[in-house]
Amino acid sequence: MNKLQIITKGIIKENPVLVLLLGTCPTLATTTGAINGLGMGVSTMAVLICSNIVISILKNIIPDKVRIPCYIVVIAAFVTIVQLLLKAYLPALDKSLGLFIPRIVVNCIILGRAEMFASKNTILDSALDGIGMGIGFTLALGCMGLIREFLGDGTLFNFEVYHGTSAGIFLLAPGGFFVFAILIAAINFFTKGKAPIKKEFGCGSCAMSELCGISEEEALQKLTGGKGAE
Image (cartoon, rainbow, N blue to C red):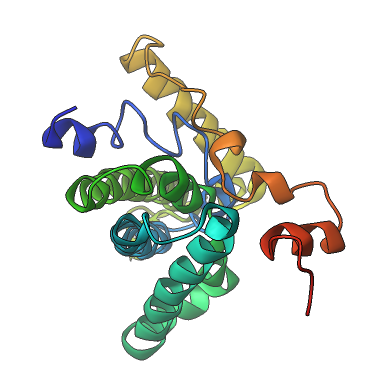
């Protein structure tokens, strides 16, 4: 796979939201407006690129048994930086996105790319993968935000476009699911259903998947390599 393919695959062919169906929680929750959607997308992309680079650098140093907590520490560090920058320079956006910025730490897209790509590839390829997946994620959230804001509030980027009664349901959960389904259908139509969903993606690719459905004590044992809280 050449460098251009690494970037472009995340935009349509393996779009993390519309094809791989990852990161649906922030996708549905933060796309009530175009600015919120793009802000969430760019924030996630910044964390994804930086964490991919660092994990690729450290891939031969991190012991396999503790790779998950190490990934989380790296990702959490960059999430903290992004959140502080938002608080300093874009406080309105930070307040609007709220809890979903800290939740980037456990975003399946970031953990999945760390586990399946960055830990197995070069620094440059890992950075390009982060750029491609980040652009795909940002475009998906931006499109959803534009559609929901336009139909639900009659505005685009908070500028009024039309007067009259708007369909407020598009700003609620049912409208989010409807727009999400329409965009997925559009991707399937234009790709003629050929956009692949590989086995390496989905919940199985998430580095946190092995912690799902188990008790806190068992999760602690896995994260600490069986040593528990000492």
